[in-house]
Length: 476
Image (tube, rainbow, N blue to C red; front, side, top):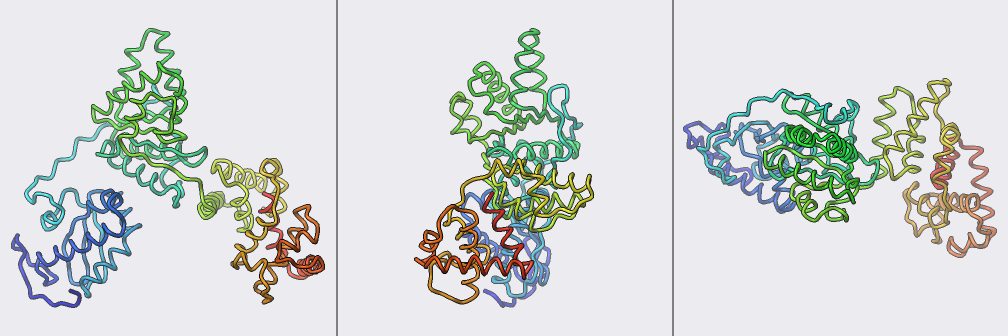
């Protein structure tokens, strides 16, 4: 129905729709857009992020959409803003912009499209609670771990979004408990501290954060001092309880029992629980079945292993905050070298920066290898010709099959020669063996490639730096 012109029309409330399009026609457009979005993103994602959008006024070339919270508005704007613009422009050609705004409650015009009673009253906000960190119960929050300092990428964006949702609306349906899981050093603890800091900063709730180990020690101490009732009352008086590294409770039957009852008491009272572990609830063998069931009844969000792009983003943010220039080649080298643990990755960069500041020396690939020799040695492994071919092909954006093809264009021949050179440098294979891996080429071809690359590295510093970076990445 794009390009249609409508006469001025009053909506049901007696207000003129400034776009000149009748309210019922606008709702029809919006219903089609919602259906399209639901098909594109799937039922779960649509229900989680998009279902709460409601239609506001349409003014000439601008459509206003309402969301109930600031977090949802920011998330939808970042993830779906462009798509919403495209869909509205396809429905109504005059629309050039979609504006997302926060509005508590449901606008009357959008109510029917969302299945909400138009006359339903908007609930009054609950009176604010004086915020505090219950340091008498738990460990203090680290002020460095905030949402702003958390670098978001594909592996962690869902967990980040869930954490933001809990920080903005604790105890909301479907998010209690929030269970975060993933490997060591991927950001679970960071997100938990960020939740607590956000809640306290907004002045809304009392927060207790502790590791599962500390929970156990405090419980044992309460038993020994015959103060278990006081311990129970203290824990169950908080608004948000966060327990880190829950896997530590595996095999601790009495502590599990106490945590289970604390869990139930808080959830039944409408309080928020946030838990982290290294595995999903269903994979935490050793926990009681009833506890695993309760942990999985809320929102379970996993943090995947980092991608190269995310590691680069983390390093760039860290380097920029330090004020010490770190060449992109060094960041790329570290991102290729340390792939499983963000904490170790950041620690390596911190060491480089500290070394540069203390000795007044610039950060280079050479100094990186010198300063981080112990970390690099821990990651040493045998390099294969197949891996060399793959890395070189990725670096120069050619097909892996070009390594063994008969193509002789420089765009293919030069990377192939580099791969042969690196195979000679980094493996114990003989020249004939290397040649066979490159399309059954003669050993003299490999000798020529090694000689040619050596000469070019002396003549072209940029080329030499590329080859050296590849070598260091492969050695990692």
